[in-house]
Amino acid sequence: IHPFCDMVIAPVPIKFAVLVLREVAVRQVRGIIQVSTKRDITYADLAHYIALKLGSDQKLVQPISYRNIGLTYAQRNTSLDSSRLSELGMLLPDIWKGVDETFRLR
Image (cartoon, rainbow, N blue to C red):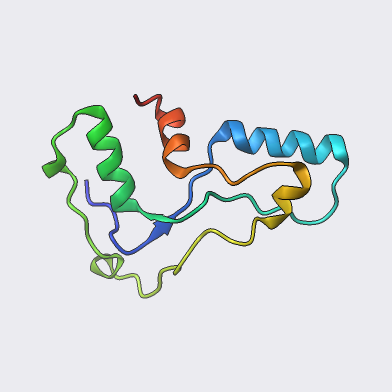
């Protein structure tokens, strides 16, 4: 695979997203609640991590730049201000724990 080495993501575990939605509904919180992980990672970081956890050959992960496919712009970060989560008594999830849960990786 050819994941981007210079584009980032901050995937949130589905269980965490559901918990946030539930709390927002129960508490009738108004406004925007941004949900993110503690930090961003590149698509390449994610691909390498998953390949490692699955026991796959790391050589199958061949990172490329988004510029290689003609894109001219990439987000510098994807994790926005998630400070309102503290109103719900929640902390930002760990990115790797979320990936492990999503893919049931051990």
